[in-house]
Image (cartoon, rainbow over all chains, first blue to last red; front, side, top):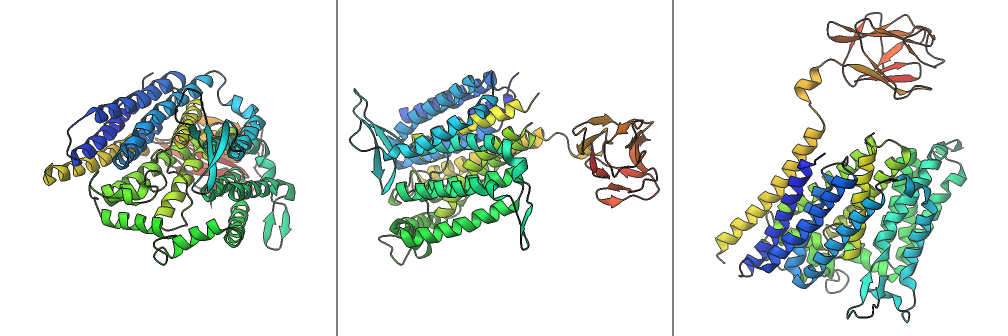
Length: 431
Length: 138
């Protein structure tokens, strides 16, 4: 069995990355150099390797998932390279590690398939909780938590013989673990949860004990908000719970309940925490306090505005003026240098990616695989929607990465694992 | 670098992005299978998509037709208290798929509309509801 469509499109994605880097090089006046070839090589090895891994261990998988992933990673990489070649160097290695991890996951699942994940759901729940708590480790330990920009999301490990501390964000992987648990849990419980027998006026409510998971989810998300001061992760985790409950039961009451709890949580957060108030102020009045709370939002808006239709050109704008341009605000940086044309291309690719993901969910053969594919797709789609909406000022900025595009190894690793798991679901749909 | 060259490069990059997306869209279109001319081919089978028993069961349409009903002797027996013993018949006639209500008590519905006495042509994607059982024509 061969996968010609995937092979050709993956190669095209590698060319996009190399051409992007070459354009940046030309703009700064230098000629084709080692960076361009290193990029081509890294993308070729990473996505070519994943292509071969899928060919070998999940040959029935959808052929468009991997190319779209490569395409998004290529645009993101070109922009990261343009802003900071040093970071791009690290990102190249992260890409190789993420691709290797993806291949390993595919190989581990080659015989047992996803059924194995379903059986060990409480192991994944425990893993997710552990990963979420990991950044709270005290600073004096060899593996310890670290506070960056006021959020305690990072874990640093000092490894003997390595000059730099190895740091990662365990929360990124925790989200994927949570999807495994939720899909497995809901696959067993959904039929009972879909029954809405109790009446409260015009509302039909499910049994109270079936609402317990939603309340637990809200609680967990709120704890993340309080202890780690991470608005984005708490929102994504909570919305993931609610969306999966809705997908599993088809009852709009869960959506309504989720929206209500989000509003309550938002109001409580606004009243109780200064960092939430700052985000809201930056969102509603970015120019009222331009040099402080509004600075990032305002810079992002300037970048998008000056980018206009086709942008300044890669390497010709000033995206370095935006705080966090390589991570949360990479969308604004792309808007400045590739314009509306570039950002619409990114959004189209995400839309197609999500469509492919939900298509896999619709065609899957059992409830667990359906919910699993739905959860993985929702995770990536939701996170990109939340941060893009933040950059476009439709929503307060909540500080999550744009999957596949942002600089950051943990995010790339977690997203890549989500991709191979989706590929595996897609492979297993065939008898 | 001359500005013209850089501008061309920028446009080339954006064109490449959209060429890629265009190819992906085409591949998605291809994976959906033939539409258009192929869609006008007559339906070839009916599939039980909702019912007490036999969900997912598919039956190839044939010229002689299949009788659907609660009776055990029906060609497509369905376990549905709202269905009549011999409820309706689906058949291929001159390359068209037709459904005929056999004088059932609760009626036969195509896409939610109750049928009269006359045989009714079916297209791909139509649903036929008998009691609480729903069949899809494919």
